[in-house]
Image (cartoon, rainbow over the protein chains, first blue to last red):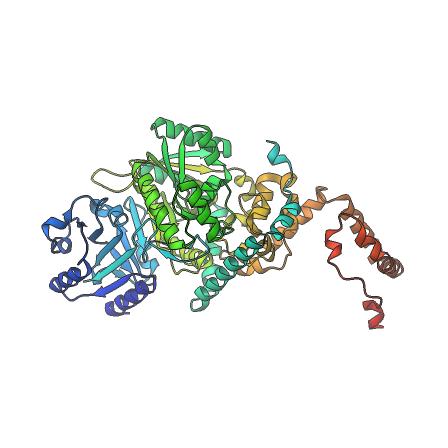
Length: 165
Length: 454
């Protein structure tokens, strides 16, 4: 399977799980996309650690360093899994995994070359000393605890946007 | 301990459940929906091969459990966790309380865990003066209602939206609504404050990974992630059989568990937690304590019922069980209901308390067909029924009846006489008190099967 096919499967599965995946060609296109996604957002948290995070354009008056108070978290995640449409969030390298959990809107940037085909491909690569926290995130937070009615956005994000770059 | 020596009043509970129309419609809706979603989820994948793999892996773990447990303990300690072994429910509760006291933790948030139900942790912590809040929506509902879970995946499955609306209006002081969306958002708001201010989080674990010392938690709401990453102290409680060899084995169980439980390809969140927060990291509790509970399991693993410990708690067996579907989880008056629950309860709490639950099966075999790890549930249920007879836990009437049948089955003359007596005395028998089942039985046909065949 080629990288492009794997990315297509990932986007398809992620959309089925309720996420909003979009593929972009370059940083410019990413920022144009972000501008439309973030139109009405007030407080934006972006760790600004990776190269792609640093390239995210955020108006200074809307940037916050406190992810607990933010209405959106924009971050680059470790990778993704095509089989399940999942993002791989990892504490590897000092990353704050829960920053993508608390704000109602999570915008995740994934490198196209970090999309694993199967769950096995990723977990077999973890070895016996993984980082403190690895979380697979598949679609937004959900529950069906009241009469099995699906409700999106319980404790975690109500909305999950994915940008494949 | 009298509660554990009295038997479960299963028949009385059943009658109560059968006379509750709102419970019956909630159950029908939920179990049919789950069974349907499960069928759809396995339709386009090699599910049978996955079940074989998952089952083989679970069997391997149980054959080498103590070796895997030793490895898990060593690797978890290496990753910065403190590991405690608890022989029984009482010692698990004591360990948890002493850890909470050591860190002066008063406010506790919990994510859904059946093992903490098994050790009756919440009531004990309340007695000890701790403030414990369940954060899974279903668990939160039943905590507010002061009830116990009636299903291992959807604990409040017996409640209608109207009942939840009235409960929230009464306990939280909000305006009455029966809109599940609004009710869910109310809980999001109320519990967010609890998460941020909690001193400790208590969770279970779906799996414990031997060679990395990790625990794996599978949730949909995100509360499990909050409980395990926001408070400075995280205590995870799980039983010895949750072990899997390595992270490479995890996909086998994830694929089968989530499809069997809710029909999802994967739950929204799968968290792999390996030790406590390390220098330079910003994620994870600074203190991680793992409480590994035995509570009779090392005895089970060495006996003829070992295979029940393969169970991954997906709930599929209850969703297809004709008894569970009709009476619901509370009738079992046990932590675990349904086919897997009957077996585990009988083994953990002994025949004295659980023998009545062995009536809660038709041995139809539907549970064995859906079990993602191929636990031979009907065979284990049948074997427990044999033990029930051997250990004299059947009623006098049943035993005399069986003796009579054994006699009649050996002699055509006595058999035909019995048929005649039953037919003639039928109107009288139906009038006798305590013959509930007889009332619904049709009258014996005057032309017997044998005569028709002649």
